Amino acid sequence: MTDKVKLVNDSRSFNTQTGENILSAGLRQGIVIPHNCRNGFCGSCMGLLHGGQVEYEGDEKPRALTEDKEKAGYVLCCQAHTKGDIELEVETIDAVADIEIKTLPCRVNRLEKMADDVMLVELKLPPHEKFIFHAGQYLDFLLRDGRRRSFSMANPPSSEGVIELHIREVPGGFFTGQVFNEMKEKDMLRIQGPFGTFILRDDSSRPAVMIAGGTGFAPLKSMLEGVRAQGCDRPIHLYWGARAAKDLYFDKQLKQWIEELDCLTYTQVLSEPHASDNWTGATGWVHEKVMEDFPDLQGVDVYASGPPPMVNAIQESFPLVGLQQGHLYFDSFEYANDGD
Ligand SMILES: Cc1cc2nc3c(=O)[nH]c(=O)nc-3n(C[C@H](O)[C@H](O)[C@H](O)COP(=O)(O)OP(=O)(O)OC[C@H]3O[C@@H](n4cnc5c(N)ncnc54)[C@H](O)[C@@H]3O)c2cc1C
Image 1 (cartoon, helix red, strand yellow):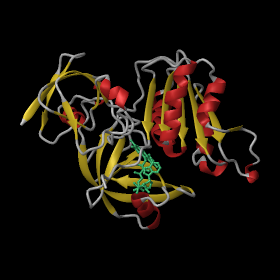
Image 2 (tube, protein in one colour):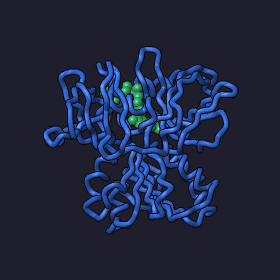
Image 3 (cartoon, rainbow, N blue to C red):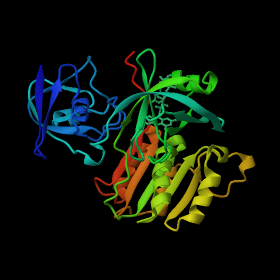
Image 4 (cartoon, rainbow, N blue to C red):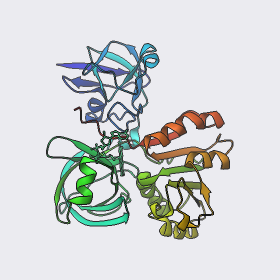
C-alpha cells in the first residue's frame, strides 16, 4: 500500500510504502529532507504537517519531538510513518538529491592511531566502484547483526577508491571497541551511503565559522580539503575543541594549512589541558570561545559537528547572540539507536 506525501512549499510529491518512514521514502525518490542521525534524536528532519496523519513505531515518541512541537503539528520525518495521504511543509536539499545511495563491500586498507582514542580507518573500495559523496556527508557500517554505525568521511570526495574515517573509541562501545581491539588491515566490511545534509553551502558568501568537537573534525576536514583544492571564496574560522593537546590529532597539519590559505584561521580550545601541555591558548568550552570572539554572529554561517551536548549548546546559545535562523548547519554525533 502506498500513501502520497505532498510537499506544500514545493510542487513535488512522493509516495511512502508500508513500513517506510517519510525520510527514507523521500530519499528513495530523490527528495532529500535535511537529516542527520536518523534516530529521532537530533531533530534535523522536522517538518510541519498541514493535512493528514502520521504515526510512530512503538509506544515512545522520538526524543526530538517534544510535546509542544507535536501539539503545534510538527513531525519527525525519520521516524514518522504516514497514515493515509499527507501534506507536509519541510525544507528539501537538492544539492545531494542526485547522489545514489550505495551498499558496498570494502576492505580495511590502513589503521593508524591518531590519538589515544582516535583511529584513522582507511577503507578501500572494490576496483572500479565509486562512492560519490559531498564533503561533510557520512556513511553507515552495516554490521552482521543488523546494527548500523555512522561515521563521517574525512577525505575529500575527489579521492579515488579510498575512504578515510576518524573513529573515536566510545567507552564500552560495541563497534568502536572492535575497531580498536579486533580490526585488522584487510578485514572486509559493508558500508552504505552517503547520508546526511551537512554540506558546505556554496551559494553563500558569508564568512563561515566551523566548530569541531573531537572527531567532529572529520567532516570539516573533508570540506577544508575542498577549499584547499579549489581556493577560498570567503573567510573561514575553524575552532577545534578537545580535552588536551594530544587530542588535537591533526594540529600540525592544520598549522600548515593556515600558512597556505589566506582565508583560514584556526583556534584550538582545550577543556582539560594537561600540565605538561604548558597550554597558553584558549581553555573551556569551544562554543563559548566562539561567542567571545564573535559577540555578534549576525551575518555568518556556522557549521558545527561533534558531540550532541556541544551541538545542543550551540543551538541554544548562538541565536541569542545574533545567529540568524537557517544559518546553523550541524552534524550531531548521536549514538545509534539499536532499538534494544
Ligand atoms: C551522522 C553521524 C556521523 C558521525 N560521525 C562520526 C565520526 O566521524 N567519528 C566518530 O568518532 N563518531 C562519529 N559518530 C558517532 C558514532 O556513530 C558513534 O560513536 C558510534 O555509533 C558508537 O558506536 P559503538 O557501537 O562503539 O557504541 P554503542 O555500543 O552504540 O554505545 C556505547 C555506549 O554509549 C552509550 N550511549 C548511547 N547513547 C549515548 C549518548 N547519547 N551519550 C552518551 N552515551 C551514550 C550506550 O548506552 C553504550 O553504553 C557519528 C554519528 C552520527 C549520527
